[in-house]
Image (cartoon, rainbow, N blue to C red):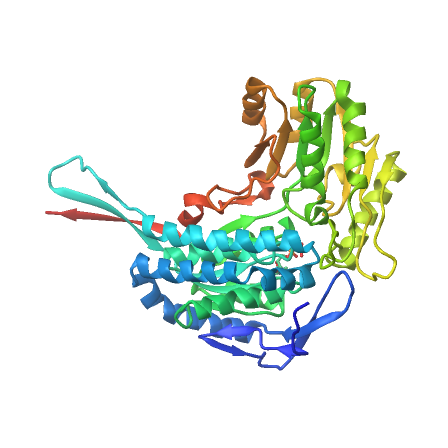
Length: 482
Ligand code: ADP
């Protein structure tokens, strides 16, 4: 455990930590125990407006600093994060619930984004375009977009932040971060690390509090030139719609409904192990989690058995305790949603193939048992909407084409996975899946060096890799005569 005072200053504007103007606070809970960890400031429009002004002032110098200098600060921040993995992982588990091992893995990944973008800061290139006449010289120069409003979710309280602010800061933008109300503590730690690494005041700011007010200020304030968001499709659509007023740039990582297709030529042990990993990591609360599994009929029985055998080994519990492999859900609403999907499916004829242990008796938190459903169909919510919890529906198919059609029959398009040992099939099917990310015998595709992002209603833009920094850059065309 890490000890926190009963209330902490969580708003960081122009290099100063402070409380909300109203002095209002809101509690942060541990979802495994329901105990309050601390209270954080409940800011809103006023604080956000001040933060935008600070970020605007800071932009002038930060954007003109040499990329090498920006890089050095980000690099230092990534090193500080790595040195503090145990403490940061513990804080992440306390506020989010995931097992400590997963939390430490996330912190390392989060530091990885800072390191990658410390490197990328030095490689944002422009272009010299050969002119069609001898008189002109045509240049394209990359410039940072400006002040960025970043809104992040609770499922990855550390890596979703560095994946956004890493490239934004590397490109020369300045930032106001609004973390999820459920998980502000990891955000505070990341900003403290930035401060310690020597980030000039105003370059990165943090406002916790009223999501609607903070979001509204991001949208209505002309000085915010870009909104980068990870969260639900509904809120993403709202931000996109409202960004039209001032024609702001948007980068959106939204929901998903990932299919897994297991073909009859798959390595079934690998397929079962990774299906479990994809579905139950973070208790099913990731946007790229498997939501539905299609299994070729000839391997239906053995795959099902192997999967259930593995699921039986899951140990739900308090993420801080040794041996826990699955934590709680984030809140009561999340539990209600999973229950609703379960009730909906079973009332429409789904068969419960397995349901596991919920939690140890003494825990009061938001737990839900790992569950496998068979005999599912497209009328069920679980096959169409993000469940964001540990229920896995599985369905047999006969032909490759059928599985592809089913997989694509959704408004989402974030990640899809296939299991096959056939090279030709893997390429053929990957090409036909309408998704931004395809995993072939792989379900953990997120990497600092690779582009993560969806198509259709799963989002716009990429995070990670050299693509990630491009989002925060405008290419200015300079035409000159000599
Ligand atoms: P979830 O339901 O998984 O929490 P949300 O999309 O509601 O997903 O939340 C993702 C992030 O968006 C959180 O930081 C949340 O506070 C924020 N958010 C929610 N509603 C708004 C809004 N109207 N304006 C700005 N941010 C919002």
